[in-house]
Amino acid sequence: MVDRSGGGSRGGAGAAKVRRARRPELRLPPLEPWPAGAGLEPDGDYDGVELRGADLSGQEGIGARFMDCAVEECALDGTDLGRARILDSSLSGIRGVGTDLAGATLRDVEVVDARLGGTQLHGAVLERVLIRGGKIDYLNLRKARLKDVVFEGCVLVEPDFGGARLERVEFPGCVVTGADLSAATLVDVDLRDAARLEIARGVDRLGGAVISTAQLLDLAPVFAAALGVRVEG
Image (cartoon, rainbow, N blue to C red; front, side):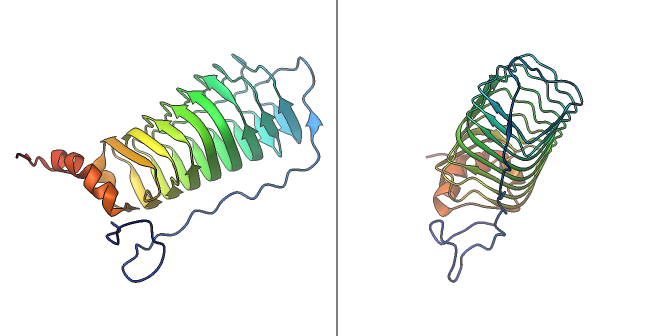
């Protein structure tokens, strides 16, 4: 579905109809400070905890559960949080390379000003998640399920959505370069307000998304290549 009205209009005749993403509504309770020197534990249960400035690099929290937590300015280099459940929580200013969240569940979560590289979220489930600001390089979301997810004002370098399902996902103000949509399924995905949109692979999977006229023109060479059309002159 392509918006041919010439921009990101949300109403009026001819405007594209797309269901909007539902954003998380966080109301954190009073939090307990993370004990100095404490570390993550596999299958750990963390409820109402504030982690501020902690270095969690290389630690293992496989299968851990975080409920009503705030994680601020923490280092997550090589942290293993596979199959973790992060619920009703905020993550602000986190940074790290190779953070492993494969198979994790994020529900009603806000991620603000993250600086991440090579984050593994393949097979993860994201529902009512807001990712605002920051920069994420080489985000692996292969075969993940995203529902009601908003990427807002962030930079995504070569995100991999291969085989993923995206439903009610938005990218307002984002710079998205080198995206891989191979074998992805898109339902009510709104790309119109992305500041920049580059699709490296899987442009044929854009059925179920809405783009602007300007984006259509920018993507014309990619569409032509996918159709085997040779453009000359």
